[in-house]
Image (cartoon, rainbow, N blue to C red):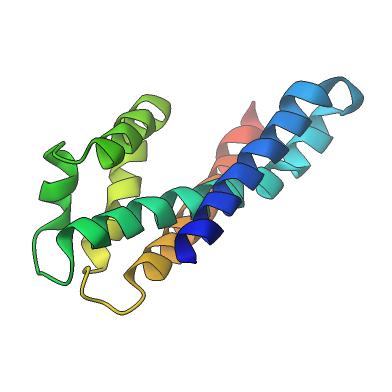
Length: 139
């Protein structure tokens, strides 16, 4: 059930992104394009974190194994693909912020995936806020 929620969230976010930035882009001003960021940003981040956390929980179980070592070992192709995409799109800083959640929460925590997904989403919302407040306003 959780996997379905995360996948739906991810696909909904991608669909909204495609609609606004590929299909409907000519009908929107720059300000409108900025205002709709949260409509696709939040579902994509939440779904991505949730899917990866579920996969890690499935592979590691309730052990106290080091999650970061597991993620960066590239033993799991599914997780490795996500990490590579995040590294390409977000660079080293993006990868660092992505991995931060996995340092905070341990896989033996009840609802590990929900904790990861929610905290990851909040972290990236804060980063987006800082970007719009400090960087975007000076462009």
